[in-house]
Image (cartoon, rainbow over all chains, first blue to last red; front, side):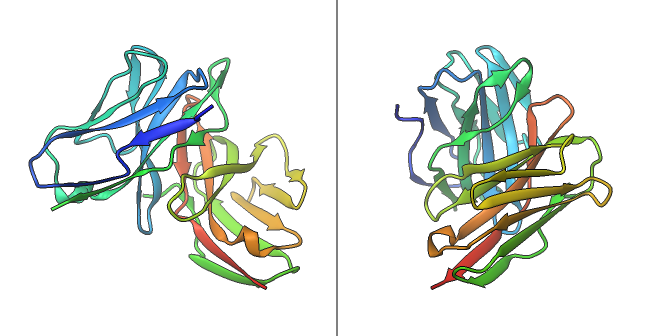
Length: 115
Length: 112
């Protein structure tokens, strides 16, 4: 199993550009999520999904869109990048027990810089 | 306003001694707590967890203690090893079972 994979590893954007961060998992996990990590702030939840076709907002959803058309993939879209979105982005997945999500498995991260 | 706080950005410990990492939270609705370990240029990896119905959980060299009245949890690593040097995040889950809140992390350095 590859686990959780993220592409690209690094990206530099100009303000106003759009892009999609890719995330895929091969563990058949129902739950997938996106976090951003900023210095002194820890990881903050952006969006999450509990299954194909189902998404919900996390702590810091503004400026980001997600969709979940398959169990495996959970892309994160930045429609108009801003310098405040400079961060390291982590995707994670987890199986669910009933309605509960327990341990999450994280991808290696995407380091995004917006100039 | 951060609901999960790790007030020590860094900790340095001698190899073989105990490492104690602390975490405080503000929301009494949190029902499940986890610790993750993160090496540079990698994603966090799960270390140990504890449910709010327990006050202690042990896994090898790692023990997590939960004090609900103080809204405090701690991770003990005994004995500490140089390979334990990493950033440690505590996290908590509440409410709809799918939202997790992370602390800002503590960088542990275990000196040989």
